Image (cartoon, rainbow, N blue to C red):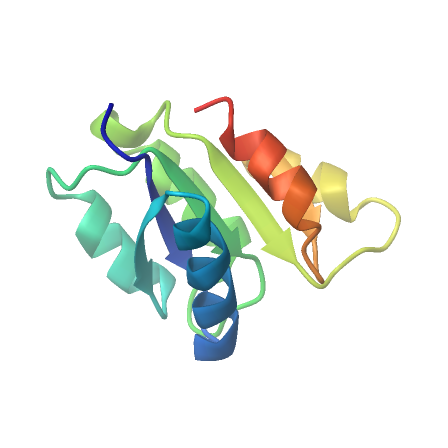
Length: 121
Protein backbone atom coordinates (compact mmCIF):
# COMPACT_ATOMS: atom_id res chain seq x y z
CA UNK A 1 0.00 0.00 0.00
CA UNK A 2 1.57 3.32 -1.04
CA UNK A 3 2.13 6.04 1.53
CA UNK A 4 -0.54 8.72 1.67
CA UNK A 5 0.75 12.10 0.49
CA UNK A 6 -0.07 15.33 2.31
CA UNK A 7 0.46 18.81 0.88
CA UNK A 8 1.35 21.30 3.63
CA UNK A 9 0.74 24.96 2.76
CA UNK A 10 2.16 27.42 5.31
CA UNK A 11 4.13 30.65 5.02
CA UNK A 12 6.25 29.73 8.08
CA UNK A 13 8.99 27.21 7.30
CA UNK A 14 9.16 26.22 10.99
CA UNK A 15 5.54 25.03 10.87
CA UNK A 16 6.25 23.07 7.69
CA UNK A 17 9.30 21.48 9.31
CA UNK A 18 7.36 20.43 12.43
CA UNK A 19 4.38 19.05 10.48
CA UNK A 20 6.60 17.22 8.01
CA UNK A 21 8.68 15.62 10.77
CA UNK A 22 5.54 14.51 12.60
CA UNK A 23 3.84 13.10 9.52
CA UNK A 24 6.92 11.35 8.12
CA UNK A 25 7.39 9.64 11.50
CA UNK A 26 3.88 8.23 10.99
CA UNK A 27 4.66 7.00 7.44
CA UNK A 28 3.10 9.83 5.45
CA UNK A 29 4.80 11.34 2.43
CA UNK A 30 4.86 15.14 2.51
CA UNK A 31 5.00 17.88 -0.08
CA UNK A 32 5.13 21.51 1.04
CA UNK A 33 5.02 25.07 -0.18
CA UNK A 34 5.18 28.55 1.34
CA UNK A 35 2.22 30.16 -0.44
CA UNK A 36 -1.25 29.45 -1.75
CA UNK A 37 -0.20 30.49 -5.26
CA UNK A 38 2.58 27.90 -5.23
CA UNK A 39 0.11 25.31 -3.93
CA UNK A 40 -2.31 26.05 -6.76
CA UNK A 41 0.52 25.56 -9.27
CA UNK A 42 1.25 22.14 -7.75
CA UNK A 43 -2.42 21.19 -7.58
CA UNK A 44 -2.98 22.02 -11.25
CA UNK A 45 -0.56 19.20 -12.12
CA UNK A 46 -1.06 15.47 -11.83
CA UNK A 47 0.91 15.35 -8.55
CA UNK A 48 -0.50 12.83 -6.10
CA UNK A 49 -2.04 14.66 -3.14
CA UNK A 50 -4.31 12.71 -0.81
CA UNK A 51 -4.96 15.54 1.68
CA UNK A 52 -4.10 19.21 2.17
CA UNK A 53 -3.16 21.04 5.36
CA UNK A 54 -3.50 24.79 4.85
CA UNK A 55 -2.60 27.70 7.10
CA UNK A 56 -5.47 30.17 6.99
CA UNK A 57 -3.44 33.34 7.60
CA UNK A 58 -0.89 33.88 4.83
CA UNK A 59 0.17 36.98 2.90
CA UNK A 60 -0.94 37.52 -0.70
CA UNK A 61 -3.66 34.83 -0.63
CA UNK A 62 -5.02 33.45 2.61
CA UNK A 63 -6.70 30.10 3.13
CA UNK A 64 -10.18 31.60 2.90
CA UNK A 65 -9.47 32.61 -0.69
CA UNK A 66 -7.32 29.59 -1.56
CA UNK A 67 -9.69 26.82 -0.45
CA UNK A 68 -12.50 27.71 -2.91
CA UNK A 69 -9.91 27.99 -5.69
CA UNK A 70 -8.57 24.53 -4.83
CA UNK A 71 -12.09 23.09 -4.72
CA UNK A 72 -12.74 24.58 -8.19
CA UNK A 73 -9.93 22.47 -9.67
CA UNK A 74 -11.71 19.47 -11.21
CA UNK A 75 -9.12 16.94 -10.04
CA UNK A 76 -9.07 18.38 -6.50
CA UNK A 77 -12.72 19.01 -5.69
CA UNK A 78 -12.89 15.92 -3.44
CA UNK A 79 -9.44 16.25 -1.84
CA UNK A 80 -9.79 16.65 1.95
CA UNK A 81 -8.59 20.08 3.12
CA UNK A 82 -7.79 20.63 6.79
CA UNK A 83 -7.48 24.25 7.84
CA UNK A 84 -4.72 24.77 10.40
CA UNK A 85 -4.85 28.13 12.11
CA UNK A 86 -3.88 30.09 15.19
CA UNK A 87 -7.36 31.60 15.07
CA UNK A 88 -9.31 29.78 17.73
CA UNK A 89 -12.06 32.22 18.57
CA UNK A 90 -15.76 31.44 18.58
CA UNK A 91 -16.91 31.11 14.98
CA UNK A 92 -13.46 30.54 13.42
CA UNK A 93 -14.10 26.83 12.85
CA UNK A 94 -17.38 27.59 11.12
CA UNK A 95 -15.73 30.27 8.99
CA UNK A 96 -13.13 27.75 7.79
CA UNK A 97 -15.78 25.15 7.03
CA UNK A 98 -17.87 27.72 5.12
CA UNK A 99 -14.78 28.48 3.00
CA UNK A 100 -14.79 24.81 1.99
CA UNK A 101 -12.42 23.17 4.46
CA UNK A 102 -13.22 19.58 5.31
CA UNK A 103 -12.03 20.01 8.89
CA UNK A 104 -10.41 22.53 11.23
CA UNK A 105 -7.43 22.33 13.60
CA UNK A 106 -6.21 25.14 15.83
CA UNK A 107 -2.53 25.75 16.57
CA UNK A 108 -0.71 24.37 18.39
CA UNK A 109 -1.83 21.29 16.52
CA UNK A 110 -3.15 18.34 18.49
CA UNK A 111 -1.11 15.62 16.76
CA UNK A 112 -3.46 12.82 17.83
CA UNK A 113 -6.42 14.70 16.32
CA UNK A 114 -4.46 15.39 13.12
CA UNK A 115 -3.56 11.72 12.76
CA UNK A 116 -7.16 10.74 13.45
CA UNK A 117 -8.35 13.03 10.64
CA UNK A 118 -5.69 11.76 8.23
CA UNK A 119 -6.48 8.12 9.05
CA UNK A 120 -9.70 8.48 7.04
CA UNK A 121 -7.99 9.35 3.73
